Amino acid sequence: MSDIDKQLEELNTSIQKDESSLNQSYDAISKIPQATDDSNWWSATEAMTISSVLLVFFLIVLCLATYLIKLGRSPEMVMKFFGTILIIAVASFLVVAGYDDKQIAPVIGLLGTIAGYLLGKENRTDEEKSSNKSTNTDAENGAGS
Image (cartoon, rainbow, N blue to C red):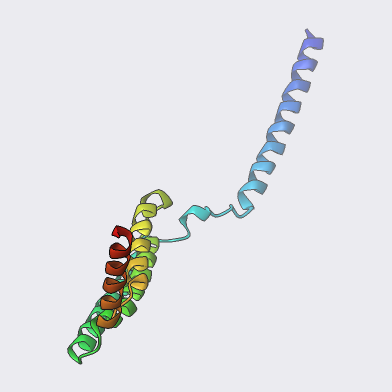
């Protein structure tokens, strides 16, 4: 029995040593600063603040556009200028508000279409319209003869 007791005593001391080394390791690990979670870099209050600032900017731009139209500026030019600014602001608002790429993609496509319409639309003068009509009429008459 004394042989078994010695083996048990050796096992107990080895277990105690292992437990003490584990405790020291746990203590060392707990003292290491934990890595921060990068997915939470943007707080809800920051997003709300920046969203509110962008909305105030939208209102200022709309008020300024209204003022310029009342002054008698060309509504087409005012619409092009401020429409472009508002499209950029709306796109940035959607990003700041926290929407992901799957939610933003259709809206960005629509905003791009509107921007293309605003910037691509040209004002034709009456002379250009009449010259285009006469050219079309001449071409139709020539094709029919």
